[in-house]
Amino acid sequence: MLRSAITVSLVEEARGGPFVYWDGLENAFNDAKKLGYDAIEVFAPGPDAIPDGELQRLVESTGLKVAAVGTGAGMVKHGLSLTDPDSAKRTAAQDFVRSMIDFGGPLGAPAIIGSMQGRFGGEVSHEQALDLLAESLEALGPHAANYNVPLIYEPLNRYETNLIKTIAEGVAFLNRLSTDNVKLLADLFHMNIEEANVAEALRQGGDAIGHIHFVDSNRQAAGLGHTDFEPIASALRDIGYNGYLCAEAFPLPDSQTAAEKTIEAFNRLFR
Image 1 (cartoon, rainbow, N blue to C red):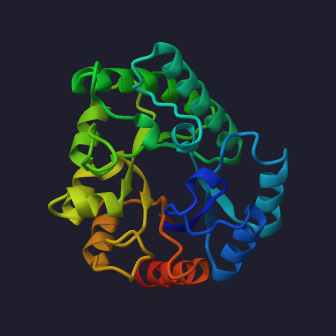
Image 2 (tube, rainbow, N blue to C red; image 1 turned 135 degrees about the horizontal axis):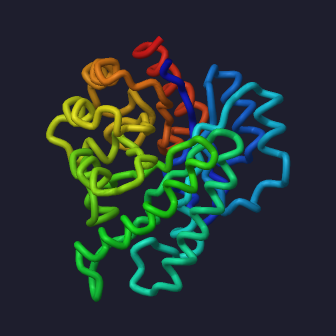
Image 3 (cartoon, rainbow, N blue to C red; image 1 turned 90 degrees about the vertical axis):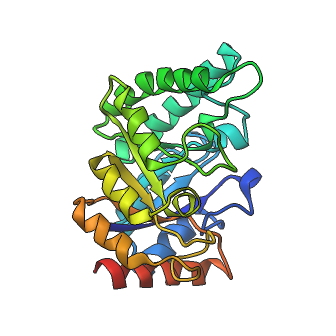
């Protein structure tokens, strides 16, 4: 069954970014529960940013799940990248992702690698960067398997990465890995920029897709841009996708409206 989720950011360095909730974890859980969401996706500065037991308490008190945990603070706050030419910094980046896997794993929440994938350039060629990224995913994917969750890798648009930008490129990259515990995040905003046909790209991605960011063409809540979601919904039914559709959207015109618009669109399309 498809499930709804919504983002909350606890990273002040990322304020202004595309996360719906910004005013604390408990407020996010309570508001999402009132609106009928199934889960929360958490963007935290690190695994120690939330007091021990707090996330578990909120899961138990609201009945919501943790859909995923972001690792972007590794880049935004700590300047870490899995393709950094400095091996010590790559090791630190892997350690940060591993700590976030350990943070979300006990709650059944996979970690997402987005901005921490980095870029190629300078002394690192495209091929070398992909090799470095593959090396990290080969190590981190099996670690995530210890919690029976996948590691989620996100192709980004051309303005945010120059590595892997489309679902087809992502599938080809996963096929070169020996681990089978890495899945793709299909972000509809990035896809709107890079894909010729979003619905067909989802069909081609098939069971390689493990998570979806459910957002409109302008990175606002679903229904506030020009995306035609009907073909996308049809494609997701065709591939048998049964994971989360999570709102990673700007809180425009405000968090409440963005949350309401997203769940309205989700219910109309998938319930």
